[in-house]
Image 1 (cartoon, rainbow, N blue to C red):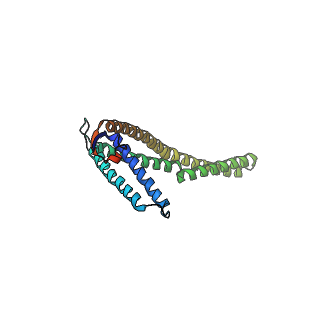
Image 2: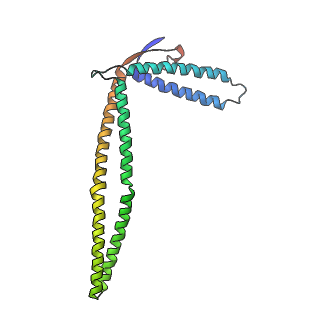
Image 3: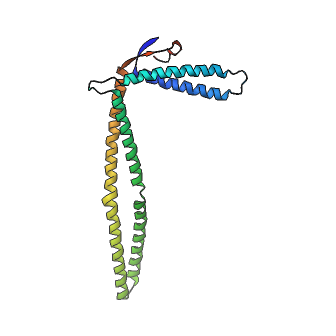
Length: 206
């Protein structure tokens, strides 16, 4: 029998059938050693569901080929969504890398060490009365301060702006994903497709 339904219902039916097939396959594995169990009978039922699933998938494919008012197919929007999801995954990977960057971590450790050395030199200078020694301490302290300044410049001038750039782009991509998903939801609920159903599966596709 033929039935005209929305893409939304077809997609739900596809997901339901895939779940039913998975349950039957698990049931078959559990009952393999049960003498009263007919593997052939359950296998036939699984095959029937698989055949109906193919028919439903072809109907979904037909629906996805329909064009909207802008002349674009649902396939186009689905591929765009896949592209955006890949961009999001890539940006998230970059963000994690920047947030746990070894260079930044090492810089933080080195900065702590330099600050500790500077503090030690300040202590030594406050206790030292020999002017020559005090001058040597001051020279060492100034070198350490220059090194500390370079580390801070590296972190602030490269990592922080780059992280902000990635985070800003991530927000834009996520907004585009939400917009595209909403558009697909609307199109799926409006586009109708005719599908050929076996009587036993009529109840699945509403």
